[in-house]
Amino acid sequence: AAVMPVSAVVERLQVHYRAIEEWKQSPAHRSLLHHTLSMTKSLLHTDTSKDEMQRNLHDFHAAIHLFCIVLHLLYDKQTIESYRTQWYEALANPKAFAAVAFFQREVVSIEIARNGAILTTYFLRPPTAKYLNETLRAKLIDHMDIGGDRALDVLTSDLTVIQGLVKNPSYSIMNKWHVWLRKNMLRLCFYINFVMLLCVQVNHSTVEDVHQANMRSGLWVVGTLGFVLLGVCAALWLYHALTTFCFNYCKQHVSPLKLSFTTSSDYWASTLHGFGAFAGYLEFFVAIFLVIFYMNMVTTTTKILAAVSVLWLFGAFLQGVRHVCRLYRFTVNVDKPADANVVATLASFWYSVLYDTLLSGSVITFGAYTLCAICGLGLSIPAVTMNFDVGPWGLMFFGFPLVDILATNDNLRFIATAMHSNMGKLGVTAVFGAIMIYLFSLVGFFHLQAELESEDHTVSHCSTLLQCYTTYIRYGLLSGGGIGDYISSTLSHELDFGNPGRYFERLVYDLAFFVLVITLFLNMVQGIIIDAFTAVREQTETKAALKRERCLVCNRSRSAIENLDGGHLNNFSRHIHHVHNFFHYFFYIQHVKAKQHPKELSGLERYVVEKLKAHDMAWIPRV
Image 1 (cartoon, helix red, strand yellow):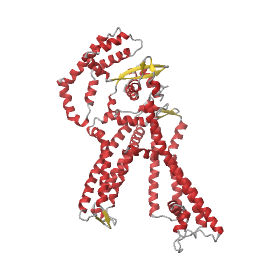
Image 2: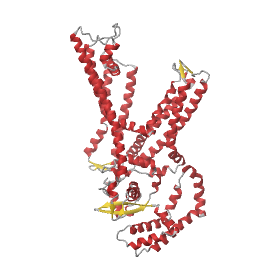
Image 3: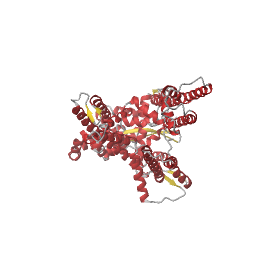
Image 4: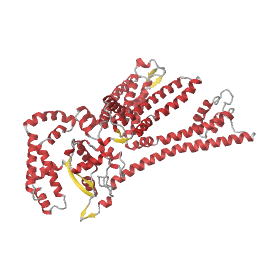
């Protein structure tokens, strides 16, 4: 405090602030930058170039360095109280306050735990901070395990991609308006289907309007809106494809934080495990189609199933290759020296980027919507539809994008989340149900042939085991009382008490199917779905409660933080926004990763980097 008197510090900050303001207003600066900013500001709604050039000024760096030292002095318990008093008195000057406020907006602070002590560090807010909007903040918190020991591992995500992308005018516009476009795409799709409901009907191979006279106008509206829908879907697909590609491109760059070490045996075992799914599917499909072709049961349906199976196998193989590429790029074999194979490195890099991009959920979703718009337009053209007996069936593709309401509506989004997280349980339960129905169909095929024929004995619903099985699946599940209800009501084979033996056999059989399949199996499926919805809702409520009642960084409760401490009230809001701001830790990781050379790191920063390399978040103070 004696070396840095308050008056000298404030005067120096004002000098640097005036130098920066004069630079902003200088003719040379305006001639080089102002014209570009004035042309792009309306599109970009950002001053990225201005900010970056400002940060490169010597006065800016000198002032930030000086201001960080002052902040350390102000909040150090050993600092004389008179120094703080002089500082706050100096800020009464409007010019001094403006200069200090300017630099204070550029500096953030965090607390770091090291050797049992809590240290406060101040650093320059990274340039990527402005791109962490509310949408990204909510997404970041939503995808983390709040309250867990590894909750803050999500901070290793990178915003430098967005910083580069936003410099592109087209991307910047889409980045601002893509949510609005998606919601209006859904509204447009609703309106197209509303018009179709009112004015389109198919009579053999021609399209007729409900009122006949307005046929052309109705189709003209649908066609025009269809082209608009195609443009919106294509723009959203390009936006998400570009964003996903750039993120995956950056993720595939190797850094010490991403590397893991393994032995040769574990490396090859993991490689074989990556192709395990492909081998399992190959064995399954070969076993099935060998029987089909041997029994000469080749039909159009089996050909379609064979084509789907080949595509499924191809996808499983590509997934295995992707697993191998990940091992090759981010795993170090401690038993074998690294070989610099440029071709293999480039091939694994680009394969991983393209695979992750093309199979991203958002890219597939908007690609499907774009394809639906193309089919809706292309298969509704009169020159094309004249070849079909059912009319312009391409119009039905305009209905599929309506399912996007699950993604755009906050109240319905949990449905997709719940179903996606429980697909494994539902799949296993479905297999169990298929086995149970198959066992009943076996009994029915060998013992109930007569009951599974029509009343006049001209049509049999169980002439082959396959037909019997499909009959049990279709009519056994769709009939309210199970297969017994179908046999008694639809096929008119009532239970005959005149034959007591047969009567009790049918009674036990029908009741067993009803209890095991209709009651047990279907209620198991419903129970899994209900539990999934309940779990997602409870998880959402728990996260909301934790955000309200607990600090995401130190994990202290709200009541503990708001207790009196040294005569001062520790307000919870002040704590989570200034003392332990979750996103300030995110910015600090960006800050230390931006330093290219180890000599640029301070001792505390070097300590944090070593912890990050070890995937150890113990440097973040937690209770």
